[in-house]
Amino acid sequence: MKWLLLILFIVISSTMFIFGCSGMQSCNINITEIDTYPQPLFEPLRLKVGAYYGDKFRTFDTIQQFKNPGMDLTEICNIQMGKANIALFDYILSVVFEKVTPVQHLPKGSDHLKDIELIIEPTVHSYTYERTTSSFGYIHIIYELNVYLPDGEQIDYWRIKGSGHVPVIISFKPSHIVKTTQIAMREVAAKFMTDFCKQGEIKKFFNKQCNP
Image (tube, rainbow, N blue to C red; front, side):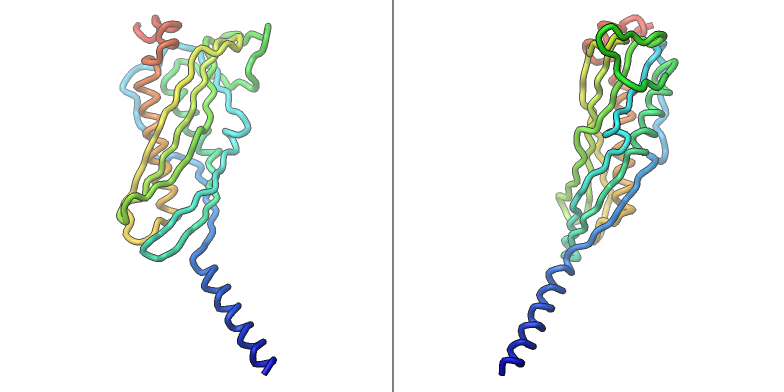
């Protein structure tokens, strides 16, 4: 009788373990590009810009849960997009400004970077997934932009939000995650191009360049 109870316990435990884990999957996604790039509708601003990319920006990753109601499945994905961050802002800065120079560190105190009129430091504020209906999957990315003078004084800061969505029937697949993220990043690029000169302190410091 004891052997029978032991066997029954093992069978029930194994069944619970299998069914408990069947609703969870994991994946790794490495996004390196933003695919097609939005084209600017104006000439580059006559500004010499330094681009500073911090370590967290270069290596940014995030863990997100993607629930697929149609399959009763939750996929936990590690999304790595440091390379895509760099590709995005390398492109943005190169088409918006006359000259862009990589900056290895932000100046402090008496430091002063020559031949640079301002420094831009992008960071990732948030990356979120949303599925409001069974038909669409949404991804929202918010970048923070810190703008400094060549001596390290911060003169402006603003956030740019990009959103993307793709239609999905049952599941939100890794390919959907990549495509939707790229759509959101392209929206960030477009907003940067149109809104840079609208920022208060930037407009004040660089009015001549913004209004040639």
